Amino acid sequence: MDTRVEKLLAAFQSNGWTFVGSADISSDWWFSDVLHLTSTWRPVNTNLYLTLLTDPQDIKEKIVWCVRASSVIPNDRHSSYIGQVTLNDFKRIDIEEFVKKVNKILLA
Image (cartoon, rainbow, N blue to C red; front, side, top):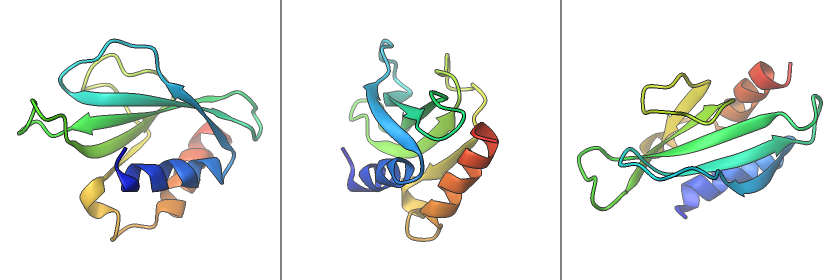
């Protein structure tokens, strides 16, 4: 797993989430994995899914370029999301603020 994705996952785990594992869905060209987390903060057991989107210019390699957060397992690449962060933006954004934004929406 990319170290930036690991840092994002760690930020969620430090802010009320437990990593359950990969969501049990079949793979498709537009993502490499969907990570399932569940809240330990109230409301307990709220689901969060982090979809690891692959670079559409390099479908064969399945290189992750973006992570999208959602409250449900996405059924296609156009599903609605709470927020997203591209891996290239990791040095420019505050990951903790991104996690707080997601928490404000899902745990409010």
